[in-house]
Length: 148
Image 1 (cartoon, rainbow, N blue to C red):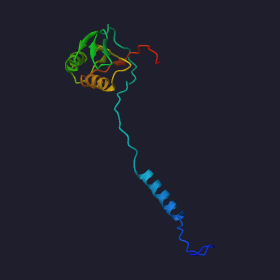
Image 2 (spheres, rainbow, N blue to C red):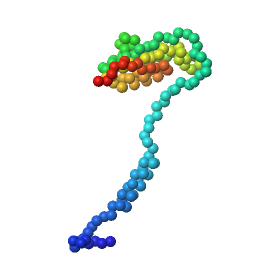
Image 3 (cartoon, helix red, strand yellow):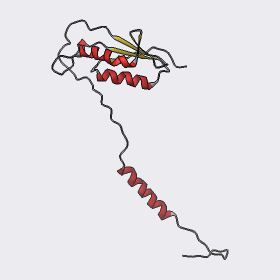
Image 4 (tube, one colour):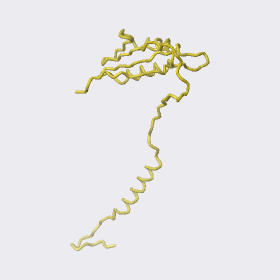
């Protein structure tokens, strides 16, 4: 190790190559050992069935509209979020077959239409209330409005 340079003064350079090597090894160890943060979302997918669906007329769909201001309407009539759970419970009880299972054919389809500027929080509340009422046929309606 030389502590002098050609200029005649003391030289105090530090060799950073081992430091960089150690830092890269530590980075790789942390990347491998720390699991990625993920939040699982349970999605109940339909199961295939070989039996044909029973004949009958399905109930009329229920149209839920969420406006930009956070107001919710049930088939065109304004409905507060506080009473939405009880209305969903009534519709969800239609599909109760008495054995703890759900007969989705007897339940109406919930068609959710949102305004383009509606808050996601309101939509999440509506969806959670529908799931809590054991409603299984939920669909989203596309208004066909193109983005500017």
